[in-house]
Image (cartoon, rainbow, N blue to C red; front, side):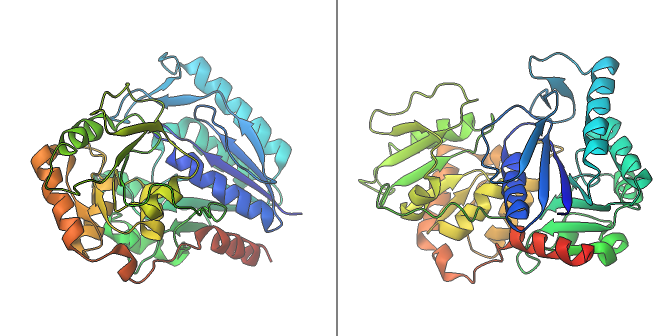
Length: 371
């Protein structure tokens, strides 16, 4: 049985590791022996037959995502970095995989050069040499400098393949990555990775307004503004509003007629039954919105450095699929106007479906390359 070694690091939200878990589970179901190695905070994951290894965890120090820390906020000193790298390489050499997959690197996660460069070097030294693959989302950070783009292209040189988990008919990788011509010959689109196990049914949440911000710690402002909009009588009059709140957010005190709950396993049921979804524009949330929602307003997370969610939301808004409010412009008035645009516009379900077979296609591509 061929072995796959999949490295993933979530820093602020949990989208990266959720997507990696779906991929690991699908690869294992297709006949691979998969080890998912995670460097973020421990989470409960459905991995199917895949195995799991937890590295000493790190996280982003703040929403800027520039600096890393240990979970207790302690900085990553040289001893910590060396110890984590040593553990990673020991696990890799014991596995001797046929495929090494780095999630986002070298197109992102460059804060982890200290361990990922030695990991790639170890793969190049292994005999027989494994297939070296980058697993990357549909969009990367557009604010990369020209020097950083050149560095990503250079770091990609020893890689055999970039698997882009997106649909070029919706959003092309060249929209965000300036080095596309240099990597195009070794890149393949897989389609978006959706969770095939999450097939929900039921009537709960019928006609509601569903407000969510993923599992990260950057949704407080969205919930605060949405709480003010619930008081308007001219928007979705009589509809129930439901806020799904991540564990890392501060407690929310909404109007008394708003339901506030933790994130739920039947999120896609609620999403499919809702009259309107209001959410961030992270990869997983947008894929689920495209698969299940009727109408949606996206309020993308954004910093001067992080542009991925804005680019994804704007690409969909330009096509009329969703309404969008930029974070810097978010207010009760702008959110209310976006809700009106979403309700006047066509249903998401009226648009041609995007390719969401990314996990299965990834498995098929890897089997093909190894054969």
